[in-house]
Amino acid sequence: MTQYPADLHPDLLARFSNNGGALPVKMGIEYDILGADYSVARMPVEGNTQVVGILHGGAHVVLGESLGSLSSAIHGGPDYVAVGIEINASHTRSIDSGWVTGTCTAISLGRTLCTHEIVITDEAGNRLSTVRMTNFLKKIR
Image 1 (cartoon, rainbow, N blue to C red):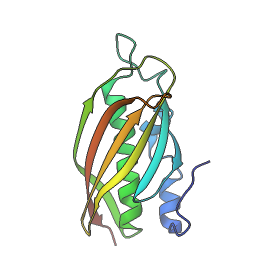
Image 2: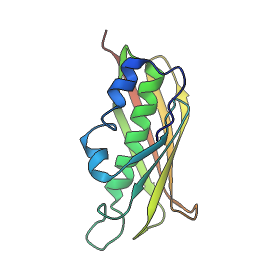
Image 3: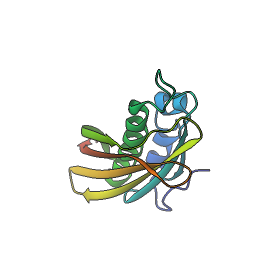
Image 4: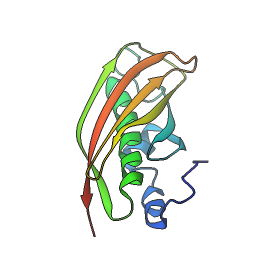
C-alpha cells in the first residue's frame, strides 16, 4: 500500500491511480512512499533483465524516472505536470535476482524545475546505480 502525503490533492491522487503509467505496471514497480522530498519504490529483477541475465540498465533508469517524475508532480501540485528534461545514470554494480529499491531524494525543488537523485540498491543495501533527473513543471491550468 503506497503512503501518500496527507495533504495530497485529490486530482494528483487520481493521476497516480494508474501506478504512474503502463510501463511501471509492466515492470512490476511497487511504490512504498511518495512525496516531493522523499520517495521509495521497489522493482523485481525477474522480467527486467538484459541478454546476459542481469538487471537491464534501462530498468534502473525507468525506476529512477518513475520516482523522480511522481515526486516532481507532487511538488508541482494539481495545476502542473512534471516533464522530464534531463536524466543520467551511473551503474556501479549488477544484480541477477531478487528485488531492487529506489530511494528518491530532492536536490532542488523550485518553481519551475525539480531535480532528484535516485539511489538504487539491492536487498542487502548495496548501491547498484545512481540516477539524477530534472523535471520541468509545466502549467496545465
